[in-house]
Length: 451
Image 1 (cartoon, helix red, strand yellow):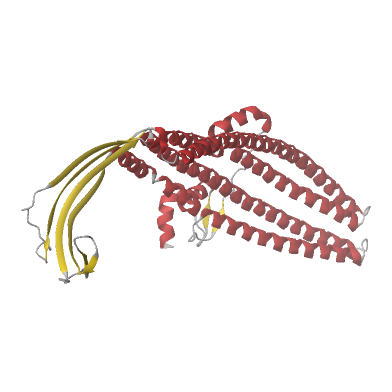
Image 2: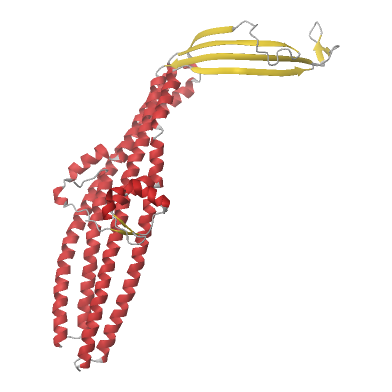
């Protein structure tokens, strides 16, 4: 609970007045759930952590390619020896060494060297390559955030749907008990038989069973939401009812949605980055035909003697050794056929990535238009379900009145009750299906469509 208090201070403090706690149970709003998920979701936190490497990675790439590489030896000392039992005579023939004995040496040195090289546009290619890698991390973070928010909203409203279905089952159970009381009273008056009473009792037990099953569905939905939030120490909670997202598809234009998706969808942006990376690699293969310029500078001192005199020798009696070099090489004919094959391979990779980007655009257009059609269908389905529920409710009222008057049997009444119960559930499910369709459309486009 202490850790939860620290997390809540950063995520839930803004809504403290609304978070009246009942015992250890907190009231969880949708915005609070989204805030907790952004701070605690493992998948999203990994993407954010990876994006945090961008600045240091760019700085490293810049310094690595523009600044000469530096090698510094502050202190190095060695002691080694050897014995040669064979030697050569004047004519180079091997003979036994007449003075075979151990010869030992020691040395101590310090040095500093700078090296830098360039070939064609390799520096610019390396920087472009790093920039594209940074963009990939940002794209992954953006995609992860969209997926996280959509999944949290979906789980939140799924729990709300199960709560509404639970409330419907409770109302159906109360209505079944009332119907049983009416049937029992009519039975005592002699206008109904024992079969009707038993059937009414059976209906109550069936409603209780359905209620228990729905309670289990609510608990499973809570567990799914808790897991999605990523907060392993979240205390028991009750969600605060939030209005479902609702957007009339007649207010949208499918072509405009496709254009919007092409501009902001992370998947297409990732395919575009891959195509740009293939261009960089193709350009980088062309630099093999350019001369290579290398520049180097070395300065150091070295103390070396026989025996161990130079071991740990830090005196500056020896002269400094300094070297400066500039070299130009033309490696265009080295591994000529392999270089030509590499260039051709990079060209093919570029063509393939261009086609992959086009394929990603086509697939995205299909997803957006398909999600838009699904939203239209669910929206119409909701209107029809609501109308059917109104008709079923009116029919049930008439059936109950006829049953009280004795003009129909309990089986007729039960059929009307079941029809009204099914219609009530269908309205709840259709309303949430329309919300899910809107979430699918927003996920396909890659941005929010609601104001």
